[in-house]
Image (cartoon, rainbow, N blue to C red):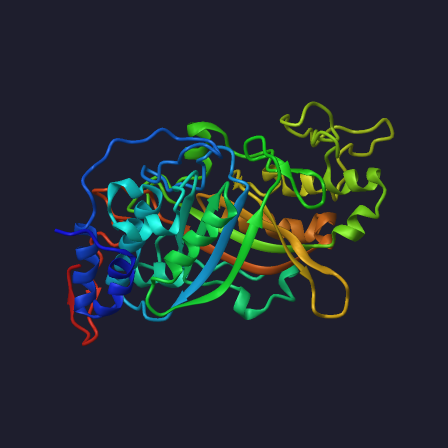
Length: 413
């Protein structure tokens, strides 16, 4: 059997019906086109040869351990996807296309993917997430079927920057590779409409820790190692075991006003020292903040409305979030204010949506840092479990789910 190119793999979904009985056959045809099992490649750090796309978890979440410096995020609407088999077909096709981009020597898409990245994939990763509508087509009770609520700080959010059907995020040390990967993938999905997109960047990193646009260290307190990732990030069991729930929040930051504050006030707002990221309660950058530490006159060393105190999971009874934040800068706003449309793309991964929701409610109530942040996009997605040459992306999502035909009949997928 000859292996398909990008247009055969993705645009071919349109010919498969994307919702009719033929859509089921199209989904399975994609799965059957997967190459034979291949030996795993070692996980690598940014700038080295590659990051293995296959495994129990998708790449771009916990691997590489140090996030790549550049990224492109796009949120799509898929009006033509209306049935469980449609979801399976899109996922399987994307998994095959991602393999073609990141392991082009496997020959899974011929010269098409190699032409997009003529110097090879480098450390490119691509991560796929499904919005609540697509999860709900399969089973609304599955993790990821719940919409992200509106928060008190979301008053100015535009409807076209909320939610979405499909999340694609590409990260790479080469910004052009990330951009080409996203364009190649989105251009091949039939009837896909871009809801919003964003180019991303981050400074030098130590693991997940980097300086955010406000000049402070970010991503310090996160799960580390397999045990903590299993406890806090990965869905533990069921058909989505190995997946996770992702929240993305595009936050425009008023960096000018924040930096106009004296450094001591900046540190009181954040709850950390600016120069090294250590909590104001003492210790090193990686040490836990002491929420009970007080000054000689009885005041909390960590101010009551500091970000570190407000975001601490002990106050919400929630788990830790794995955060991999990136900056963005789209230049000056066109509203004659002179302000920049720049800030932080907050991205977190957690086993339950509640972890983020409870935290955000508390931030809106007690965090002085929120006065400098304006949410301009907000969404949640189910990040599918990992995939392999013999396990298409999204295969477990639809396992056992009935396929509803256009005429109302139901048949197995």
